[in-house]
Image 1 (cartoon, one colour):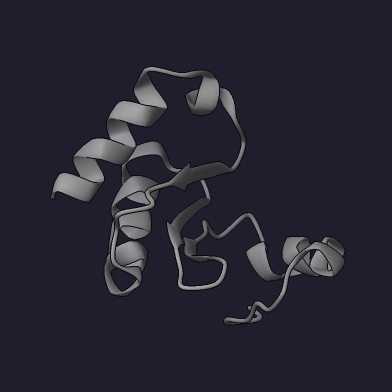
Image 2 (cartoon, helix red, strand yellow):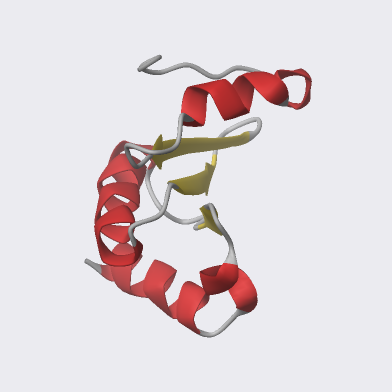
Length: 90
C-alpha cells in the first residue's frame, strides 16, 4: 500500500497525470511488488503504467497495460534503448 500511495502522490503532484503512459520510479520498491503497484495504478488512472525500481546493475520494472494499448509493440519500437524486456505479446 505504501508503494501505491507514493506512486499516486508522485502522479498527483506533478505533470505525470497528463501523460498517456505513466512511468513512475520507486527506487526503494522491491521488484517483486512493482507489478502489483503498476496494476493498482492502472486501475486508478485507466492508463498503461510502468513502475521502475532500482536493480543491482540497472533499473528494472514492471508494466501493466490497458486493452487499447499494446505495451509490447511500443517497447519494440524503442528496444535499442533497453537492455532486455519481455512479456505477453497480446
